[in-house]
Length: 336
Ligand code: NDP
Image 1 (cartoon, rainbow, N blue to C red):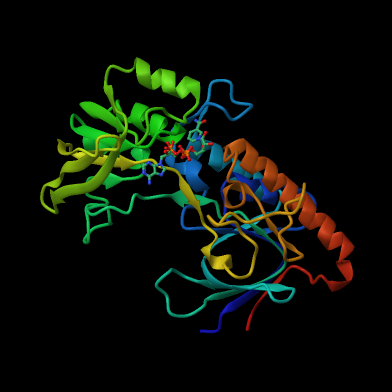
Image 2 (image 1 turned 90 degrees about the vertical axis):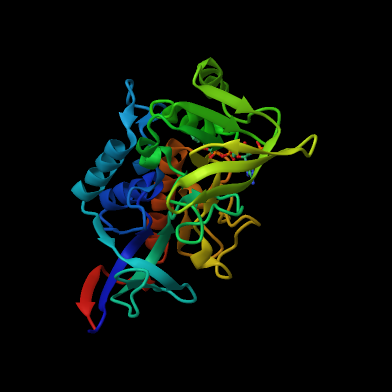
């Protein structure tokens, strides 16, 4: 079957706080934006529980509910949202072209998207340690006792001892959340101090369900497909001493990697893969392509800052279109 072709003035790749805020602003500027959901529609907040620091919600709000609100607000002003797997882009000429498949495994492209401007809000994904036993089933125990998402998997560890690896806010949050289920949470950190915010550290120190192993690295995860995780090998980073530590769950919370692989060689990015934007704007090195949220922010990485940069990217795109109006097409869809 021939692919469907969609031509839009503003295409937004990713639907977390950055992408949906960009959509709200672009939609209110009458640009009828198209948002393309990524593999995790709504982004990282959809796998979190209480969001306590998003302004406007004095009693806090559940992450998935907050993202539903973002989505509804974007749709209300005329945003179209589609779910397609983009695995090829052409930024060499405007309109830019994005090639969409029904799923990652599909052989053919089902949707071709032409974009006068592109806003990249692909976010970031959890990082892994890269140790034996950590890989997803069937190679390792990932999904069978090893996880990077306490809110997704915590329920499976009721009354079991588990470990959380990391020393940032994510690790604190995961450890605290897991105390609701686990019999004991051991927080394992490679240094002798956390980098997490003081308020989160204080909550961890105050919990009688959380033990802390300082200066400790996890070297290997042991278990079988039948038993799940049984123990880990840990090593003291000062003495070099290695030992076996029994546990039934391992939560990795060591930060995130920007989802920018698709744009390698096309857009300027730093060594880690964060997209580089120009000065105070959200413009990348390719005119008409803008980046916002965790895909370009290695420093603040908050929902509110992601939303702020999404707003900026939409305003940048709107101004770019106004300045280059003679080149812009119109919003349309057709089958080729
Ligand atoms: P961070 O980069 O802040 O922390 C990552 C942690 O993992 C660090 O303690 C780091 O150790 C450790 N680490 C990294 N790589 C390895 C490795 N290979 N082996 C062992 N340990 C490793 O990431 P977070 O995801 O925690 O936080 C990201 C941002 O999101 C921060 O700005 C944070 O404030 C924010 N955030 C805010 C929340 C909130 O406000 N409620 C909740 C969650 C996150 P080391 O310290 O030695 O470098």
